[in-house]
Length: 275
Figure 1 (cartoon, rainbow, N blue to C red):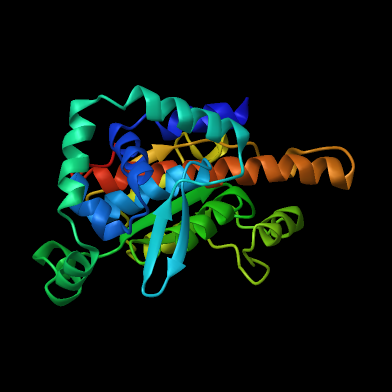
Figure 2 (tube, rainbow, N blue to C red):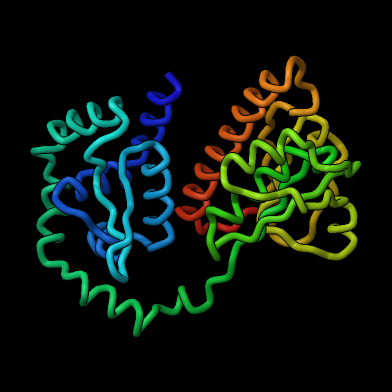
């Protein structure tokens, strides 16, 4: 059921549906998809991450390019859905127009142009700064920070803090190591120290119920405040394996939310005020 829901969410965006249809024609790099769809490259990259996480596309480096294509094997549910999608979109006039545009696109020309003459927006682009907050900065906010810094490349700069910093939860360290991220040397930080240092963030996100009411400092600047609660690993009970199973679920939920947030942020260029 979880896989089915993830697939439905991945295909809930019309541009992601178009990406899948284009990749049914042939493998493509990000630059080709950008030229075909007429949207910004960071937005295309975010859509590809969501689709890849759902098992609907896969990327492979070939020479100087990373080519994206539909998977030839793997998730059965994704495979069945892709077959139905191919049938549903076969006569879609909008998709037909995209495919006609694709026929006139040549990778070498597009990619060479992007490398030699980046547009002004790319020249001045700075990473969006994101702060994740929870009570102790020992689990959820640490995982969110690590995933955003890993998945966001140079487009996002994540930090985290807590109201009452405590050592990193060893269960979280173990779960993140399984996901290929080493946070064993991370230190818990005070959110008030970040505030007093004058740090400015585009997004301030609380990830626990304790942090929601009355405790968050008001960070300066044009900022969006979000509250996205997750279960606290510190309250889990049972054997080590039982607790680890629950931490893995929390970890995966946080990663999925980070991917979802990036897709939304990349598509939204409207400044928002703290609220």
